[in-house]
Image (cartoon, rainbow, N blue to C red; front, side, top):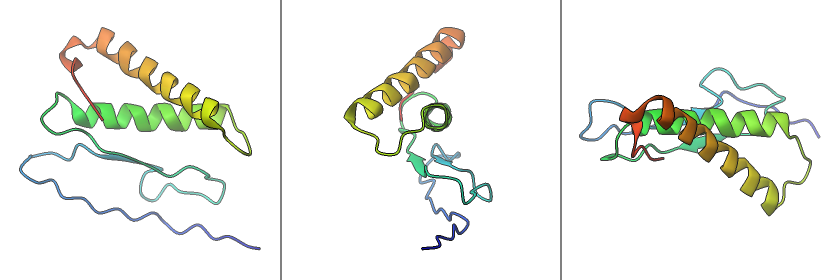
Length: 104
């Protein structure tokens, strides 16, 4: 069976904000036939730096999946992946305290 990856397409509605707080992986135009992860992170509006949180989590999750490739991920894989993303968020908040309270 041949699988063809088409370019991901995304739609969003900014709503009452001046910026989009959501992130996707892979970025538009960057998907390849080798990609096995497609991700949407919704930056929480009303919280500080939702756009930063959503981008950091997309990057951390994609990084973890690329470094720990498994054929059949189980619950412990997802637990470790989320802990990795939480660690990246915590490290960013330590370096940039104005991001405290960011959510995705």
